[in-house]
Length: 338
Image 1: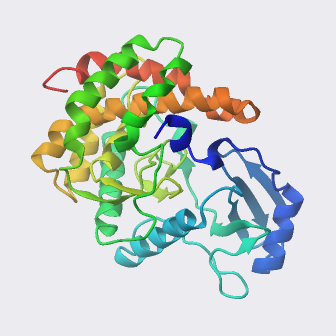
Image 2 (image 1 turned 135 degrees about the vertical axis):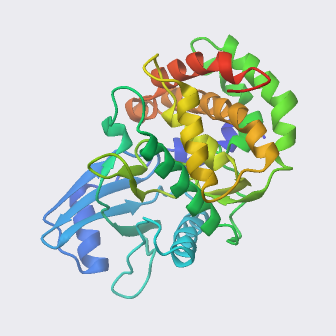
């Protein structure tokens, strides 16, 4: 499969966006909720809105017309399963419509309404120097709890072709021409293909959240604990440890303010307080974090080039990710890792 085929149509195909006014109408018609205001929130592939009402706030998501309804059902079912198997997980659960539907199809597009979760996103910038050890532990433990809750979950769409699955990184090698300086990335890709990718299938496999980025993790006002995990849009069946690798990649330093090893050590401690890593998972983790950085650079650069109408959003993290990659590469490419 070449890279453009792997990159689903909902990432690149143009479509007519839902307006703020249409969003308010949808919420009233299908959920019986009167909105004072509906504001668009930047998103990669769907229409997302912050809906304000006198009773509280909600998040409305209206899928891309090209998105597979089975993939959306996977997301909804995974949220429901995880919440039922660990009721204390801080997950926004979809709200049923007036007629009891969790994901109504409206003009060919699936719509879902969620409670607007309290907390501040990690992207808001919550540390000036070293990350708080308590918060790192909370992030690791929360993701491990979510992974443990999803352990028995199965769904017909779980093994979908997803460009954001690190296990699919070998299929993205053709995107290196979108990078400004592809040589170091290509070298890492070569080593990944030869040494790391062949070992992934032998690791424990299950459906994972797979998207612990700086917008999808909300923390409390003191920035010491995770209070919400958002957006199951990249949920997929893959190597279990990749959920930890993904979140670690977003927390790595982009300068010399703190050490990458402190981040990984803190996250691992939190993860293993819930779900001990197997020896091979631990051994491959540093390389998988590096692989996720490569994946982020490849997809961010290619998509921002191919989808100019959304280039600012799609490319907003490229420079930061490249700085993380350049700083982490000497440590992560050693045989010993960190």
